[in-house]
Length: 431
Image (tube, rainbow, N blue to C red; front, side, top):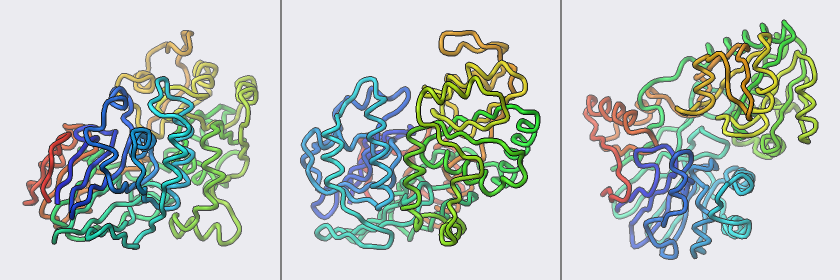
């Protein structure tokens, strides 16, 4: 049994790993490269798509499913295995990606072809591909997210996909993997543990109380899948302690995910399921108003506070949030709250440095609003959680992380006597 990384090797996007075992060729994820690496999406896969026997998807994020339509464009016609939640979410994510790509490498027909080949596989069910067997474990990162356990040739391989932050309440905690001959594990936050989630929520609520209490606007740039809904959940649970104010969800994609969530109840934590069982939707807080049109979005800039505006994009690479910031950052009553990662060199990172003025949509905007960064909202496992998940595993290969962060995790694993190394693009790992 061998596995060959064709993405997310010493980088954080493009997850794609080819498993070779029992005469089968199985692709574990088929993700898009993002940010500075996006040109790689136009390059060949590094393997023959038509020679692949099956694709297994861990979750619906674009960096794990975004090249799937390209795989079909290049001739793949086999099955794609995923949980129902992953299947439903990836429809939204792939269709949205097609709209915003500057240089598309697939089209709508490729998306539809890929979706037609999806076969559902749920946690604990065993998939048999000849003499190779695979099953899903709970990864706790997105609704329906999974890690993959593979058995064949007398060996066991585990591929983590992305592991969730166990401190958070919306999703179940990741399950522990079985003992394996090799674990291919993500290390996005291999360099540090997360701040306490309870402390993060407390700070978030204090920011809201202060800003809304002075009739200010709270701007929250947010990822449309999972993060926006988590913020809505926190507002639902804690609305009683906040000043009354409208909450605007200004993201068409986040709205589609919000509408989908009642169909995914069984994938959430027991706490969230309990709300739905009593007829309540905990992702629709008091005062929620969904912004439908661009005109409605623009009108918010003319209205006085207090209000909360949740809008994309989460990394300020585009979207409606930029227009709200152009009109709102000059007012000291307002607050900008970052609840997601801001890449180096991006607009968010620049704002965090507190310059006097920001160049935004062709204008110089005075930066007088308050700015807060709340790192504890991360949807990934922190360093301590990764170490716990890998406890007792004799051999680990690290992927999906910046090289220096993976290196720190590698050192900690080595100190515990675990063989660990960083995977390399195109280099086979024997199991």
